[in-house]
Length: 307
Image 1 (cartoon, rainbow, N blue to C red):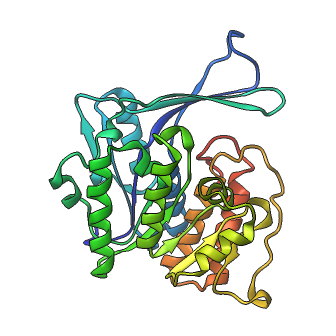
Image 2: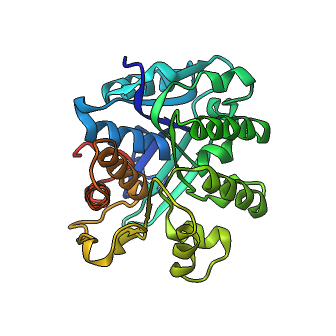
């Protein structure tokens, strides 16, 4: 284990129960996997870096069999699992996703009392965060924990960033059902954007959360701050960079096949951050993120085996 990780991702990973095709009650079974927005990014980033980088994941899971399997999977994917704590009083969260014959997906969640929701409930928990060149989290990370825990984590990251100990990378990944109300989410996200060094927002999330009616309004808002790095994701249209002149923006070819867009943004973040950590320029970071996302949407599930 290195003294400093290249990337530390913080958040919740859940057991994923997936059934593709068919319908409920037809006797078809579910396949079991594991996923979660920041976990997906951590896995894909570890794959992209290979032996040239180190990626850790910070979360809490249970001591149940699914949690044990998750830890084994994280280790097999090359993640440093030293920071996955096991909780004897809570279980890993679970979600089920079904895809019908037309490709329509439906989700069900069991995460209200998951172990990850107990993150940062005590002052000493933030001190357990390891040193990392980049610390990555999302709006979902902040949404699932309590308000005191959220403030504790944000204050710690702000201090670490301002002291130069880490760069904070953030994706708002706005999911309204996880927040008590939109006003709270907007305030928390605005504070995070003020603090973050690396911005990886999705333009549709930002428009929904901040009430902006055009993509340009989002771009203009982000352009008011000087970022270490910033890529505004726009799905199939490709990302927007605030630092590249138009003639230096690379081409973003469409994915050859689109089967499941579940982790498109997460995998883009992984490809972008992996390239950044390897010292690539902005054009290559953007291309790396887009290329990885284009591959991931061609398979089923949040974490596919082919990449």
